[in-house]
Length: 121
Image 1: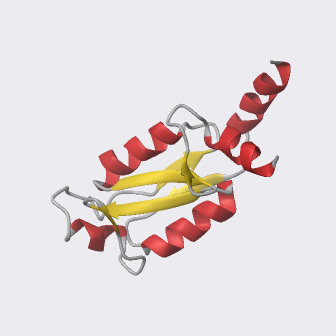
Image 2: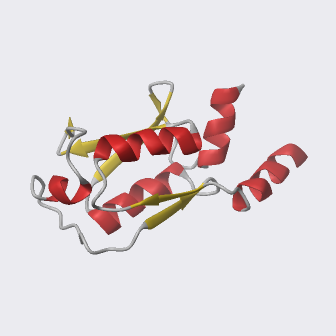
């Protein structure tokens, strides 16, 4: 219990803050996300996985949802839940993402920090 509390506090002050810009390629965002959190970030175009060479702005042209290509960087921290991150991508960039660990979906209520620690153990 105390360990969980300490982990959550540490996640709030984690130096890792991950930025996302609409001009970045999906494969670059996914690779950087993996390096920052040790988790997979999968982008979807409809029900299919999106091609990695697309940018977020390019993905917008292939979906019905609008993306503000002039939007500032979105910031993601380890203290955020998988569901919060997925909702941010949907609201800011109009795209669907899933966060995975070891090929399995991370529960929407689980923080990125907790999911990362689960893969490390």
